[in-house]
Amino acid sequence: MTVRHVALKVAYDGTAFSGFQRQPGLRTVQGVLEEALARLTKETCQVKGAGRTDAGVHAEGQVVSFRTASSIPTPRLVPALNGLLPPDVAVLAAAEVPEQFHPRYDAVSKVYRYTFFRRAVRCPLTRFYALHVPEPLDVERMREAAAYLGGRHDFRAFQNTGRPVKSSVRTVFSCRLEEAGPFLYFWIEADGFLYQMVRVIAGTLLEIGRGKLEPSVILAALEKGERQLLGPTAPPHGLCLVQVKYPQDPFGEDDAPCR
Image 1 (cartoon, helix red, strand yellow):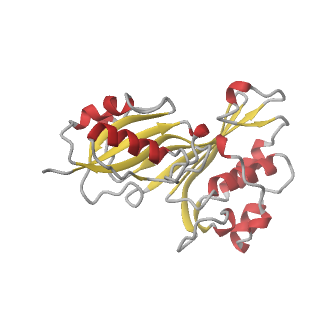
Image 2 (cartoon, one colour):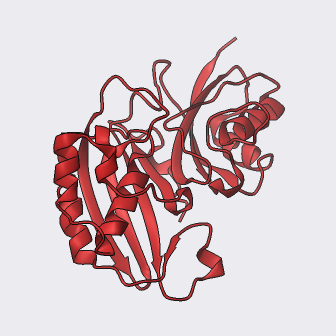
């Protein structure tokens, strides 16, 4: 019996999920994927993910892997699983990977996007995917603050309690703000993220844009490591895991974008 190790690229709307990680009695992305795999393969498949997104957080490019003895051809897994999955989660690509592949530990970086909707009147169509900000924001102040985040730093001030880690040192490869009409996108790529780190940064940048904090607060927090220097944690619904990068893309030409 041949056991294959398969990686999936997954997209989901996190609104109705209690996060990615399986939790007893709660609807989670991991749980829904494992249920679909069990129905398809008639096996118990344990899904491992590249990241544990919180309740309400979305994904365009989550990567998971599982092992199976099923004879279903790998290219057929995408349509077969999508026929079993609910409308708020979809498999975009599938590929066989080496036995030692781990979607989390083999990743070299992850890309997240936080979306702000800047308009006096809220829009019902964006309420699950962007944080409504009715007042004007000083984007240049926000850009000045974001520039301080680049490089390798101890980000202990930028995490909330909940998940113990051996080290809070991370490397931010890029960090930028992009304007598109009423939307303001905050993009960040790093070799790893602490618990709710992106949301803490987004909430802090928002306060800086509002003029309630100075851009230099980022430098002070990096130096002192004190969470209370920073702004509140931004709500989860504006956050999306866009991409997980590896030394070699497991999906290659079969990697279909979500949008």
